[in-house]
Length: 413
Image 1 (spheres, rainbow, N blue to C red):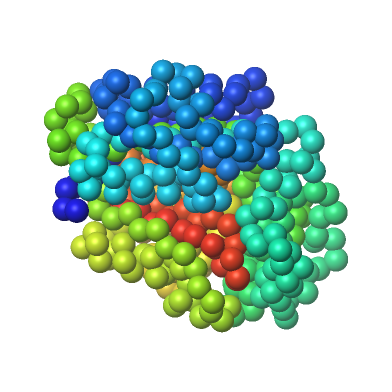
Image 2 (spheres, rainbow, N blue to C red):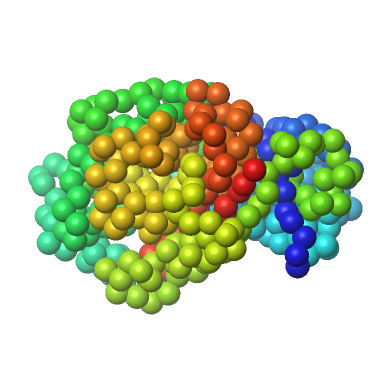
């Protein structure tokens, strides 16, 4: 399997509230955008990987989601694979598309993720996340994860009594562990969020495009200590897609080689049983080591990264286990501006999940959309100068004390 995979085209809807649009509508918009960007006709597609997590929960469409959504826009008579891998579903769809074209099983593949999550029934909306861990051991899951935050007592009034995703409790426990082990402060988590909200101003497809100062982030509604609402990703609707080709596929479409980015590495990694503080065994650390070796580069070569910041805590942890910052230095790096646009290693120039939004079945392909544009020099006000290598990290679910799965992708010009 030596053939190169390329991202030939990308498309993405605006992330946010789409109460008047269906999964089919969002899918069509993202796919048509990617096809046009690649100079590819839908009739040239040879396989499709469709990512979605919650349509069964909200609409009862538990099966054949991709076949139905894609048939509605005339894509048929090709293999269609439905992909669910929690919040890493879209990056998993991309991973499978890259492997498929590299193997020669197809020359032109589609990876698309679409999600509609916003709902007037808040309890129903947040309960969509309850299936992303072992449903047979819920209390055991909670106990094990919350113990990670021992030694740091949440101040009075720092825990919300309103409905929110159980995963924010998980992130909060991880954050308190980070505070205990490395001396990280709540203000450093806040600095990450303020940075990402500032980045989002330049992204017309972001759910929120309003800057917030560090003081405003800190003063916003508490969720689960040390998190405030502005440090957390919102619930989101949206879709994103990519056309993935090998050399033979590129020759058949109209995309120029200079606008087609190479997939240098795509690694799918699951977690393992480990001690909470054994971060050298973290699944993203393990997966990233494989990705760097495949790409033939190291963390210092990365020009720009999009990482899974379902909360500001997530960005700090991921920046460290990816080797973009030393362990315990992620908060300090954000505070110093090292991870801001213009800094040493810009992270989440799109605004990240905290501002761009997190339609979980589309999120990973949203990262690919952003990084492809960065490498092409098409990112507008978010552009990182002379971007050569770009990294995406997208995690999903919980198993034990960490994500159940993560996908690390490295793209290059």
